[in-house]
Image (cartoon, rainbow, N blue to C red; front, side, top):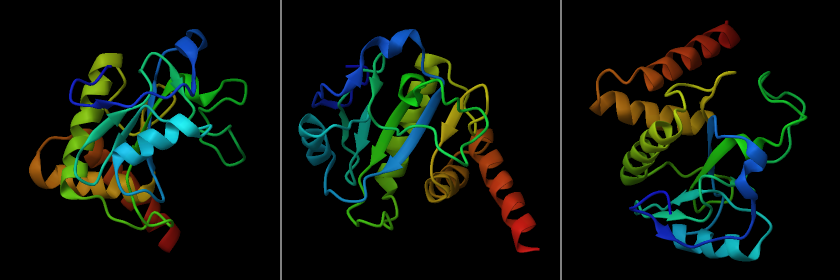
Length: 183
């Protein structure tokens, strides 16, 4: 296991050794169903899908795929993708994926306070282990997730930990983007 605090519920759904690539991005998902990280971990043992980590509403971390492998958590590169994604490269081989348990099928659940704390700490450690830039994703790497996740984590971090430039820049970029589309 890569994360000492995690429960190990292994999945065989991964790309061995990332086909020689290294992780450069962290991708954050919501489960759109399920009630615990353990339930998701066991699901990954039966389905043709997996992520490296799942964070439960209670803060429990389950690791299902080792970080040196590519989990089966991201689909292919489709129309409207960010410019740094290449259709010739499997995104699973250059990302570490984290699921957050959200029981509602529409992913409308807000993250719990403990999910926010645990997610932030896990992302920090993954960034340090793999020299992933601690900022919003761009061509060189970083973290990418849904707008709701970014705003939720950003608000939590900015309220508690001054000087967190990654999340501050996310909020400023989102506000700037929203202002341009409202005008």
